[in-house]
Amino acid sequence: MRIQRISSGGEFEAKVGYCRAVVAGGFVHVAGTVGQGEDVVAQCQSALDIIENALQDAGVGFPEVVRVNYYLPDRHEFAACFDLLAATFGANPPAATMIECGLIDPKYRIEIEVTALARAV
Image 1 (cartoon, rainbow, N blue to C red):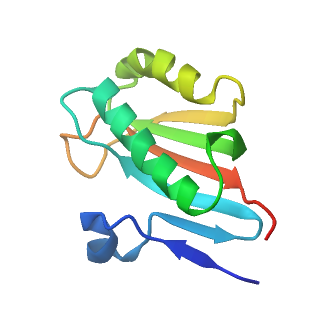
Image 2 (spheres, rainbow, N blue to C red):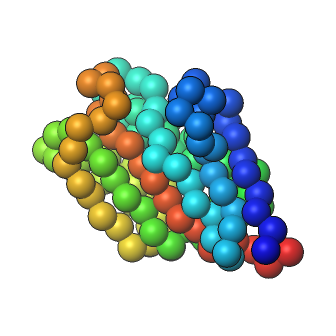
């Protein structure tokens, strides 16, 4: 089985020992991704941009996403992201879970993790 590892060059990849995405077993597994910005919506958009780049590097896009997990330190902030997420996934909605939990740094308001169907090579 062929495994492809995709790095985005993020600071935590080398520090922690992981990569942004792994293509294996017919799927693209994108690591939990935080974004930059002053509020949850800006961070959500930034995280989606990083995820989109990783998906494109794997030869797929948001339409191939079959699973998404959202992690937020404050579940009450999630509703502010609904319009952005609906615009991103609306025509091809994946299965989804939202979990309220602590993130690696208090400045982060959302972390997003996706799994997508890989294209046959």
